Length: 67
Image (cartoon, rainbow, N blue to C red):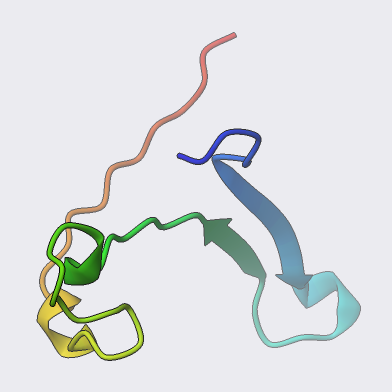
């Protein structure tokens, strides 16, 4: 995580109580990725690195605060 950045931000998106069809929460998380250019003199920069190779299966973990 970058110094000074928040680990995540959560906010309400829509509410059934306000006439919407569903309740929606919006969760934003930071992502840091180094392009090959970061390590290799002739590597691709982040604008030309193939984004599709970074997509795939994920694992979701639920963590609840105690207290």
